[in-house]
Image (cartoon, rainbow, N blue to C red):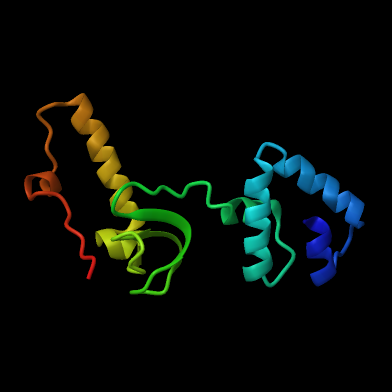
Length: 141
């Protein structure tokens, strides 16, 4: 895979063998099939020689596909155009939204919700305002 990258992008500062050693060390904990999938996606999408973290991101190891919807890393939001973590609901519809468009919450607000959930587990009587109002509803249309 590193050789394939080297035929497309110029390798500066290190030899192909040195770069291969670095990539091997960085990626050795992953399954070969996942590395190949990530590498192929990088060949399709990267405009520069990808660093190991880009290959790991492209592996979609965090893709979760329960009944009815799909969550994955490499999606483009149909509403705002953000590229990254996305939710497709219903699964197979192409209706993909980023976390913010799906929930209507910023990353800071989502973090606050998780903090509230942890507090609710510790303090059974605690109910933040968003829970009293029925939580958050998202729009999938």
